[in-house]
Amino acid sequence: MYLRLTDEQKMVQKTIRRFVEKELIPLENEVLRNEREGKPSLPAGMLKELQFKAKEAGFWGINTPEEYGGADLGQMMMAIVLMEVSKTFVPFQFGGSADNILYYGNEEQKKKYLLPTINGEKKSCFAMTEPGAGSDTRNIKMTAVRDGNEWVLNGEKTFITGGNEADFVMAIAITDKDLHQSTHGREGVTCFIVDRDMGWKSEYIHTMGEWGPAGLVFDQVRVPEENILGELHKGYNLGLEWIGFARWVVGARAVGAAERLLQMAIDYAKERVTFGKPIAERQAIQWQIADSAVEIEAAKWMVLNAAFTLDNGEDNRHLASMAKLYGANMGNNVVDRVLQIHGGMGYTRELPIERWYREARLWRIYDGTDEIQRMIIARNLIKGHVKLGQYV
Image (cartoon, rainbow, N blue to C red; front, side, top):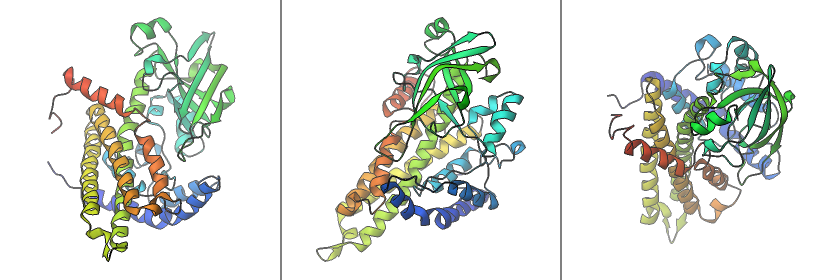
């Protein structure tokens, strides 16, 4: 067992860190100003410009297979990259990638949807959550009824990330009600690739943070048979795979943000003087810094373990739930302490702390709430699906 990054991993980490410090962090004041004025965080086209700058540095399709022009660095490197990029709130993601389940498409689907998404010509989103079916995916109501060589979709999806900007959606719908009911939601649902011009509509959902998800409405939307992604009635498994990847990613983002926030608190504590001493010399402040550092380190290793397990071809869903649960709560604890250390200034919009505070609260909800992660972890242990210590 080697508990250190390899030289290659360190090199990638250093390069990404340099990119974040040089290209992204200098944009933070502009992003804050734009958001205060109700404008998009970044001007139109700037994200693509930044993505091509990263491409020039060799970062394109971090986890995309080489056959599709990607770097295919693996999950461990993806975790390391996400931790570095998350040290800023500037909304950036590396180009050249696509949703993991799009790779299950047939050759025609890959040509029409996967490749254009990788090349940045199309944007996708994934839609499973509904107004009455969040973590309880068995309660999905959206239906797809066969009509000749087409399927007619009716229903609503909600809180869909990227739903306002997407050119197409991968939507989960019930295709066999009896099978869906008899298997407790595990079968009888199918994933459809649905172009926007097929008729679905999106509506922006305002939230307490800068995340702007969408509500999607499908009213007699006709989808051709060839747009089924994967197998008929087997869409639930694709949904699980999409969500499973997203879970440990939340933990990685929380680690990156928390490290940046804690450094801000340390720097401020050394500068802020009260009653003749820097507050860094006060035990109350030191303990908050110490607790935060310990929790960040623990979350980091949980995330890396989940990624490492996936790289080795093993089922990491249990570890992903643990990394998501602990990482999200760690992030909430750290940003709260950092705001407290900054006092009144931390509460203002002059600093990004309150923005991160609002964003961090979402981490404990999307891609499976705290309560769902606890249920999954406990169930795995009680039913014997996972043994204590089996991942060491």
